[in-house]
Amino acid sequence: MDTWQRRTLIYLVGLAGVILGFAVAYDYGMSAFEGEPREFLHSLQVVVETFTTTGFGSDAPWESTGMRLLVIAMDITGVVLIFLALPVLLFPLFEEAIETNAPTTVERDLEDHVVICQFTPRGETLVTELESWDVDYVIIEPDSDRADDIYEEGYHVIHADPQSVEGLEEARLTDARALVADASDQVNTSIVLTAREVDEHVRTVSVVEEPDRAKYHDLAGADHVLSPRQLLGESLASKVTTGVSTTLGDSIEVGEDFDIAELPIHRGSELVGTTLAESGIREETGVNIIGAWFRGQFVSPPSPDAELDGSTVLLASGTARQLESLKSMTLSSVRGFRRGETVIVGYGEVGQTIAEDLQTARVPHTILDRQEKDGVDVVGDATEPADLRAAGVEDARTVILALSEDTDTEFATLVIRDLNPEVEVIARAEETENVTKMYRAGADYVLSLATVSGRMLASTILEDENVISMDQQVEIIRVDAGDLAGTTLGEADVRSRTGCTVLALERNGTVLTDLGPDVRIQYGDSIVIAGTDAGVTRFKQLY
Image (cartoon, rainbow, N blue to C red; front, side, top):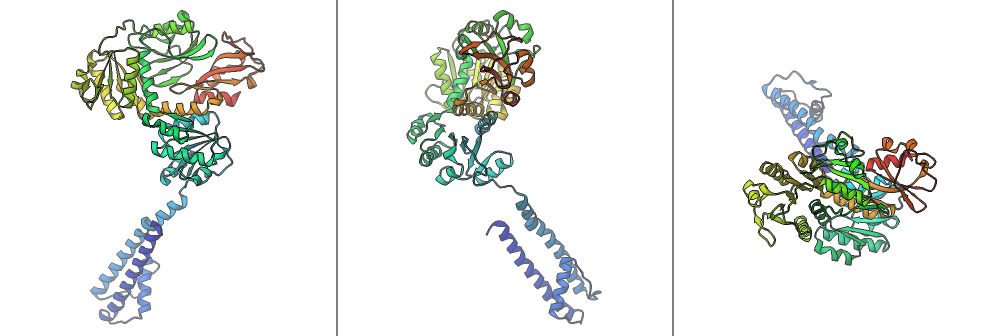
């Protein structure tokens, strides 16, 4: 018996008892106070008519005070019981009637889909990526309320246990291209083991929170084991280590001697304070600016009037020599590293990864953490000005905030910016929705754990689609010419119609990068484009 049925039973039993009680009292009152005895059935009828407001007063007027008080009590009780029935019985009944419950099995034919076991913030990014590639998915959520909520939000979800054979079979795992285990470390190993029982050939991707437990996921049979926090730490550290020299570092090779790189502009760079048109980037380096992040928001193509600052990250394409020339322009004109110039705030898994990368790059750094442990230079609170001063924030060139609580990161950013207005603040965000607030607080560069890990999952799963995912919001893909074959780039007008930029044409094994509006796309060509998820989706829909 569910809650609504139990409430209904209690209400009906209570109502019957109250009606019978008033019927007995009314029957006695008519004899004792009015001197007009009634049959008990008549007394019961009067009480029911009064409670239901369908008719009353057949015995009126009553002369005695006792009967008048009894009738008043009957009227009030009847109204109270009617209004009580609304929230207790009728409202829940209506809610149950219109409530949308998540299904327990896949309601349509699915093939080559991705099975996502439990829904997390990084799962939202993963789903966005899958949808941009028209790849079907189904989420298995064991919590019924959570499953109902995300089902109402429009996600493809079933309510089932991902650790059970039945649950994975309901998601049609045997027809899937991959399974993503995204719960706790222990649950993920159980999901992988179950997946192997259902289909030993399905590709499994397991997310591990504690890197030292990765080997157990391997032993369970996972094909790929991903550590999001380690990746986040490496990404944050790269914003400092790539500034040690003008060496380009990581880049994406599109063709022979033609690469794409993500280049953050550092505080003190000659580019800060100029617009894209005034910067002379194109004239001095020859690179093509595909897009840019302005305080975490990706714009492609950026406006020539867009102002560059210490939070701007450029996405550029060109030869290695051209990109290295642009790299030198993005660096600070004075970059003499000294002890304590980089301060790492927070020494958890992310902070330790950052410290290891800085150590490898021989970048001097100071570590501040709330707990005293090996590797920590200053023990203190990241939100206390005195502790930040002790860590050398006032003289630092860069501060990397690797805190697990976003509210602490936001407050620490405000304090750091007050102590040292010129310092470069690089921050970690646990939740994607807090990225904007961190930029408003004064951070120069923010990476979201959910975004980085979600795109990492997508990149792993979609490797057969030739997709290259960067840290945030942009994809670089190769696609067949399709409907564009036979047209010139000027006629296609890809940039204005989709927001994507055509980077190169691949023709007979040769990559053509010197593209003008008169270049004609031929049948059999492959096109390399860059754009946001939405832009890529528009491109595929149009062409």
